[in-house]
Image (tube, rainbow, N blue to C red; front, side, top):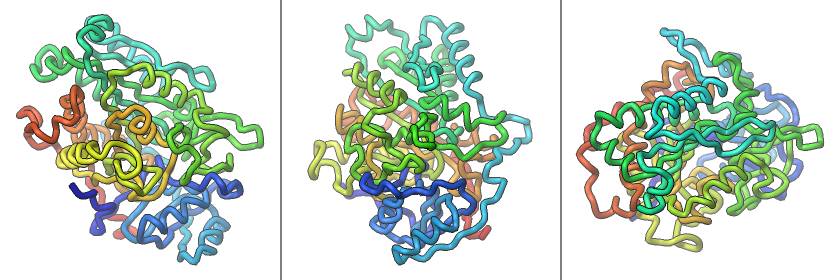
Length: 441
């Protein structure tokens, strides 16, 4: 099967906040001042995008022929030295505002997430167990749910497959918290009445950790109304800078491109692979789950479904990984995209970004690991801080992809030979529709 096209040229596709950064060899890369401008760079292929990445900027938006990042006028000049045309526009305050929806809803705070997970476990003791992924750098709990009708002992005896959903590696990506949280509630509420969900929860172990980076989330969260554009955790780097990009801190291919050794960079990879307690938490959990087959990390924004590799342009199986796995990844990504209308592709088709979660999960453990870059699809459509009214339609657009992963968790390779079950075949609700930012500029 052929690799998916990198970017739909006819529509706006924003690249993961997850992504982009500088080479590990470029210690003086990133800006050290507060961003004042949204900088547009003409870059019409992955090589050009990766060239910008090596300067240490987190590319917040990608179109077919350009990229955008937050920076200063000096940053724009630095990129121009690469002989790439740049345009700098002053930041708009509304890009830091989450707004208010007609029903006065807002994004969920860390404390509220923890309480809601606790309530789910308390009210459904035969199905839900509240556990913990670990503690954060500032000693906050990283709450996690186990959802299964089987006890740990039964699951081990029956060798049930394990699937892991997580959100909020990056602090400002608040929608990435809401989707796994709502999914946990959906699974629990449907167990008694939905035969398919009952079947799945009787034969799988589901783990859900909505906030991997609680310190960053708490720092960025301002009553669900205003954010601070904070991406990283809250590590004191000891040189006047703060924070490590957790999605550049995983061990597979760490520091080999698309990350920065400069602590001021939004894609600072940390002093060593797994230097951060938050990524150590994920590592320890996944390392101790030999039956884990499938993993999903939710991010914003872009409307993308991404799979390995992110740290190399090579396809799975060319130099690393099992070539038999590539058609499985491609089929799963395409199937899920048919529901949420996101763009399915290999991560590095955007640009090189090493040390990320999915490369590590697949490269180290052979787990079929995906990243969802959720709605919206542009900074002008809400970016990292969309109106809370997008929460419900984004969940509805992604519910069947989430259930699809759960359905095939017992053997992801089944997707190549078996039909999608009938309960998943009805159309999903399409996600948030946002006008192209070209209409706004």
